[in-house]
Length: 567
Image (cartoon, rainbow, N blue to C red; front, side, top):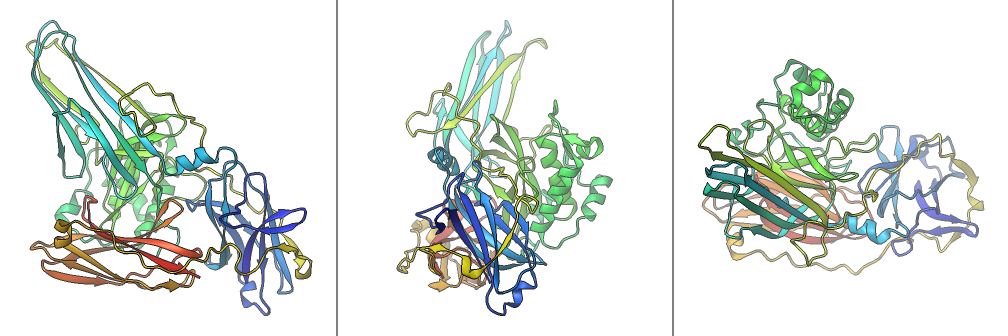
């Protein structure tokens, strides 16, 4: 059995390729073509289409048919689909793929805008104005301001400029970055301006829906993990109702648990903006909350189930840029991001999209240190106080200006996700004789860009890092699409210390990063460890893979890239 995607026109079916993609308003025809005496016809149940972010945008049941006929579906492509590669599959009754193919979609007149939003580089301007509004001086003023942090590979910070320029940067145990300002004395009516600007390059990071099963275990010491497993203010993972809810979501695969927990949070909480930060217990008792409560309850459920998790804070673009809370859970030494309130449709997407900038990781609620801004000062009289104004702005970077606060606001109507989901009530499958199909330039090789197989060299690693950790990878030159294989990865620790972290394999697909394997591994001093993860790749032609090893705060200790041909 095969499934093929074509442009349906008045002159026939035209093959869709990367250089000849389908566009909004055009008619997509999906053809399910059986082979002679095809036994898979009996189990063929549905046809689905996943967009580049692996969100289901087409879902339709297959009618009963035999090997002498084909089934086809006609779909008019809507305007809000995301540019990129779409996976079309025929599923059996258990949801497993029988056969699949790809087609490419390119947005219309706003293509350049949407593509820029696909891998944007944001310019974040942030300022803190402090004024001593009293008639007497205040002393020992101290302020900590959180800085956006690099979270490889999906969030890369560059061109950070801080004012005053002599301020120092420190890092906490979560890997957060802070700049610290202090003044021994601020006179009456005196003001100070603290600010920074930074470029933040974002790439979509997705955990594929069909990634190999991952175990719950983590390589780190219990002492480190305990912080993310125990209850704390606003993350009350020992609350009886939270414990009971977590127990009803049994699953040994932490990725599946996370998706089910996220759905449970969505069912439990009605989204309402709150005047403060109330957390998980409030959410489950009151049944309402905003992004803070959604993230806190999800983290509490994970902790109650023995999965380390934490909340994050930053900014997100919906209709406008707003402060936003998300979450992360730890699997095999890798923090997996999830945005509880930005999900679209019935599918839960694990990963991060390029409209969400993380500034701090960890519990910022209550009197914790992980706040965006924290300050203190001393007064002579109890009535004295200072006034603090925070001004921030995020726009698309043009690579030149890093100081202007009043940039024009970008078009907030651009949407990366949120497509319409087609179902069987809207898509009417038709059965026709094979002899009646007219295909223009259509054959078995349509849509495949054949490239000469080459082996690229590993990314150069500095001598300092090369002495600490060395990566050796044995990868096949070519593999059949969808077939599982086991690359061999050798991790060599040249240092005198034990290295603990996560080895992962990432695939780069049209600007989207898809994690194909996650394996936590501890490497003793002056020794090596070998891992053979099971992965499978989709698509045809050349695929770029990156293999990296990172520590617990996400710092990359070694990485290399490889190319593999899919046929």
